[in-house]
Amino acid sequence: MSHMKILAIIPARGGSKGIPGKNILAIAGQPLLSYSIQTALKARTVNRVVVSTDDLGITDVARKYGAEVVQRPSEISGDLATSEAALLHVLDILRERESYEPDLVVFLQATSPVRLPEDIDGTVTALREAGADSAFSACAEHFTGRWRRETDGSVNPVNFKLSKRPMRQEYPLEYLENGSIYVFRPTILRDTGCRLGGKIAVYSMPAWRSFQLDEVADIEWLEWLISRLPATIPDEKLQSVRLLVLDFDGVLTDNHVVVDQNGRETVKCHRGDSLGLDLLRKAGIPVVVLSTETNVVVAERCRKLKVECVQGVGDKLARLQAIALERRLPAEEIAYVGNDINDLGCLRWVGVPIGVADIEPAVRDVCRLITRRPGGHGAVRDVVDWLLAAREKESKMVM
Image 1 (tube, rainbow, N blue to C red):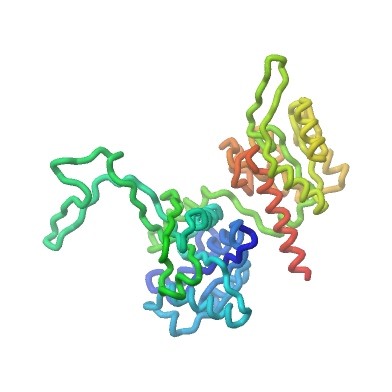
Image 2 (cartoon, rainbow, N blue to C red):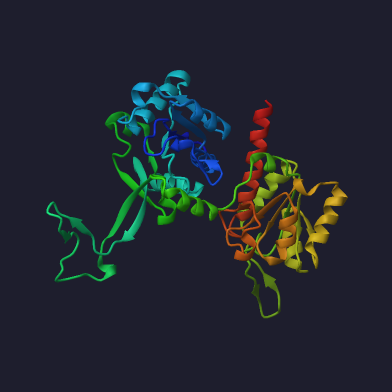
């Protein structure tokens, strides 16, 4: 999918009446708009992010958090202006200035701060796998009884009869459009003037990631939800990493072990991790595996991966600090990936503490980043991708 040009557009005008300055209102310590920008930049499928705005304050925030800006003219910036008008304006400007035409457009609402990068990637994938022309994110539910208020004030059932109430599982699966993510081919917008058209696919999101900022009362709830999201870390912290240290069981493996009748152990690993570690080594970032276990399978796997292996470590933090001293590295320049309570000391000490997606809950809050995938299923590849992307961004800034 990397060969596709996938453009994320975030319309964010300045004239909000319900909540003045809504798009750059501080939510959990960050401007509301920043969450959508950061999520788009972290999505694997998106390779360009543009904010459409008429407001200088929004322009400053957008650029600060890494997005491009297309200034929106006043005639499509009022209360009655449609999102489609802003989207089409961005496409026209980029075509006129750069002869740029994306293969797909990802339209993100600035008021949805709790979506994840994988939600964006999932919506793009839903479109592609269905061979569709457009797609949207939604909450999927087997709704129970739905009621409609009539003009006389009474209420009547919509999807069942009072005399025959269906079982919950008998209700049809329905989708509630959550307004968070839309993906479409540019021709759909140009030909129909709509964000959705042609063959339409749907991506199902959990209800809790579908909440938006509509009124002041939503702020406290959204801030609580944001506090439960995987932590993020500034690019400059990732750019400073000079050593990656990995736990073995539960990080390079799925934390399971198979023992045969002779006592020989085998573990399950992920080939994507192997390729990622090779790319990291070529980029000049060394890797050390630090394992409590002393096991031939650990040594053999590390030998094949061409990474240094330290086994039988009772005090992981003490050994890690010794490694740092030998290499003359401060804690701030070390990233550590763990999954369980025996990793707590190391995670608290290093500059970039990372947990795998299936990390033990007691360890999760110590981590600044949580991988998208569990241990043994590509978690290390997630980390490698973050480190290499940060390096690439740094090199572009230098140029």
